[in-house]
Image (tube, rainbow, N blue to C red; front, side):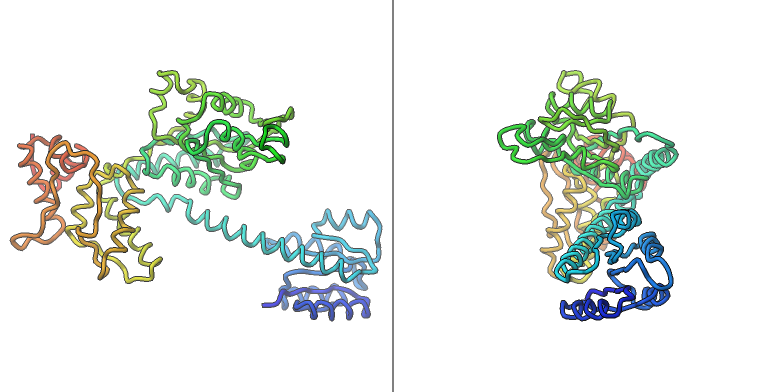
Length: 461
């Protein structure tokens, strides 16, 4: 589809030449010689770009410029005028004009201005698409689960978001997210950002364990040209890039001591100084940190600053491990299978009863990340769209007791509840009624074991 350009110009000869030029360049031009004609063309033609003369027979084009720039989806405007004063140019740019060209118009300059406007609009459209996709993939709806642990997590996040909305001035307090590897700490951080008042700002993420200390410092705070051997040009850091949004520092327990000190100063002063610079810059951002490591223990061992710990943990969120989320395992498994069905253009996958029982019995040391990968493998190996226990390549890292495998259908028993009951009975028999040992054998918590025993009216020690 050709790029639509509306030319608003009352000089007929100039308008005709520009119109022909735009056609030769592959654009779709439309001409209006008055403000009234321009208003009608804007409604009917919906141009991508407007070339606007300010001196028109029925009024000042500056008013039309302002109205175009105040729209919810502003239209880019290049001003063309014979009133080539500096003041006119300043007023046009203040009103929101993308560019300004004085008559007589050089067609080569006009072409460059149009190409620049087209390029920026395409870039803005791309950025808008990716920001929208990030927002859709980063809200509370991505935190799937109906278990008590997940309902508690949603409630906690709701409290934090409500307090953010009530904040009158200043920046919101930092949030510290705790949880095992693969439990979904990044999803929680994204939900806090995209559901909150800073959702339209940038979400900048950095894994503190992924870089050595000297590179991590440069990534966070930026550097001036010549600050160190490889600093061949000035570069802003991720802290400055997160201005107006959220900075998410994952695995903050792995921060080097020197970087911890600088981060503490940043939290206290809200200023950042690039490496090699003497100037401090004010930043407005929300800090969210996450770790799977026991920070309090690290503080006691002298490996993590206590003052930084207290600064970061003003608001705390704990993400439950998958083994404590009960039948959320099956909900998530079906969700991931549905994703893979769409991705690989295969019919919808179903979970066989033996596969469901096996998923519920697994300990999930890798949490949701492990489940997602397991479902991907299962989707690729299931030949008929039905995932059975044979399609589940689940790795066992510890085996304190003889592992209790999911019981196959026997004696006409084929439903999931019956298979689950039989599996729990076998585990209790092997553990001689000891609930804790049976739970470990099944790879689930004692609380989950008690819940499932009560569900099936089973007893134990």
